[in-house]
Image 1 (tube, helix red, strand yellow):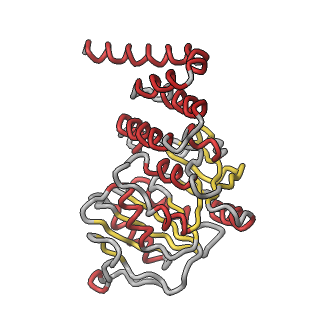
Image 2: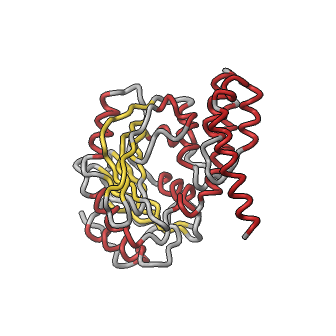
Length: 315
């Protein structure tokens, strides 16, 4: 049955998210809840929505969280909701940021499986079907994830990202952009940390890895768009610094000094915008031999940051 979105006064506000307004949901309980947070994302939003509504697995709900948009986002969402009853709209006032928008959306999710996507990315038609099948085939696992392609602003494929294994998550976000997880993961972890805007996904997977198993699909199921206005490009420095913070937190759970040193060396030399000197000093103290082995990499890393610092002072 199609939802009527013509009269906003008929819509009930969400009881689960203060400052958010939500439309009534369809009566049928979906198998999968997909949350789509969007803030001024009109440019690619329709493509993202169509890619979810066109999934081969149709037992879904698409919870679109308009995070205080001031562009054409509200009109685009209403257009799609008028055509498909699986679309639900929540409007945040004021803007809460990505992790806050995700939490608002998942607070209203009714599916046994959870997923989220971005307003500028595209899910391949069989993404949800394949990920759900992976979880069905691996009942011990709580999270399924898969490879993805990188596209530019025109939609042209510019790269490919192979994900996993999740066992190496301490060395970087191995989960990627195509994923599906059981609702109990959301409930157990308490959602996304709103203080970690920019690394909320990596933080979520790190916390999940303490208690849950992952299954990795060696399939390309998603198109991840990189462009000049993307979040990761606009907030790079903050994202890198927050990433260092959560890695240091996770290392408190690691007893093996050699493993801790490996992780510190990996992350200590990984950032082009944050020198992470504290990580490198700790790595050298934990395992001088590992640090010596990585000495050329460390030297190049420090030289690049020194050059950037000198250039900045000269401007």
